Amino acid sequence: MANLQNRMQSTLHEMYRKGRGMKRREDPDNLYIHSSSTLTVYLRETKKFAVWLKEQGVKSRCSDEEAARHIQAYLDALAESGKSENTIHTAAAAICKALMETGVRMADFDKPRRTSAPQKGRSIPSSLAGRADADATGKEHRRLVEFAKRVGIRRAEYAALLGRDLITVDGDTYVVVEKGKGGKRQLQRIAPEDVEFVKGYFDGLRENDKVFSGSELRNKLNLHALRRQHIQEMYSLYISRMAADPTYRAQLLAEVQAAFERAGEDWRRTPDMRRINSPYICRGSIRRNMMQNGRPIRYDRLALMAVSVFHLAHWRADVTVAHYFR
Image 1 (cartoon, rainbow, N blue to C red):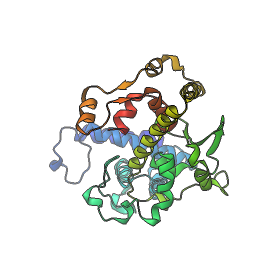
Image 2: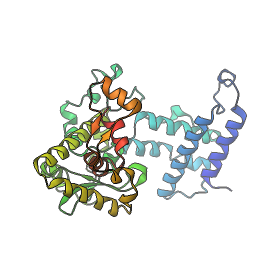
Image 3: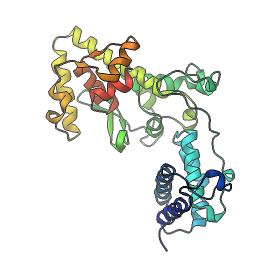
Image 4: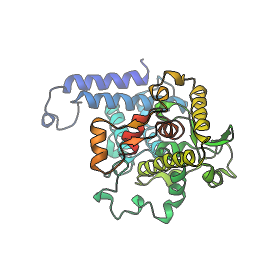
């Protein structure tokens, strides 16, 4: 018997083969898959489910019925890790489709109700106006919000933080993100004035204790907006330090170069690093957008790279400006 992942994905491919080109109204019982994009998403989600089952000790060649018995636990684990309602709904849809022969249905499982999510980095949409779980000023969210303002990582990364994930490297304090952008380990630098505050979140925790509970992360807070705010503040901090101390620019450059080396990358091969002493000037549609919104079009490239390396893990000035300064 083929392993579970191969069986589920074979089922999905067959559903797509039969449903491709079929009008949705011709499939009232939703037995097939009609678009390649849906197939791609469902294949990805069933692979994640199969990997999770293996991590739980379930044999890879388990029966479909046995796999179906773990669906609720998997959805609960996604919620506990801080995944959004839409992400959990998509996972459930994919798995139920792949295991349809067992008789499982979406309605059989307890999962968060989907709502309109806030736009990244922007104001709360009207569908969330007045909702307590989207109000960043609410007392019940203060602990997460205050931490987010000083650390600026992603929702799933807050959910994964453990008691051991605060370290010091060469005199600077970092929050460790074990699986950051691209699944890579990243070090999120903490500003010196925020170190004691951030340390308070880790005091008294054992190595494997979570910093934030699942309930603290089940909300509609626009954490990306807080991340965006944090990035702009860090850029301003680097600019002000260089203005106040003529020697700090050379120090910051050396720190950025050292970060490249720790990551096993050659900074000399990075276009931004080769032009580090020339300003970053916005061009094209980004320039037009900046000018329309009264934002600067000229930035200090070293400060941008410091922000990108130490606080975003993008390692590129253009991505930093396009996604966090517009």
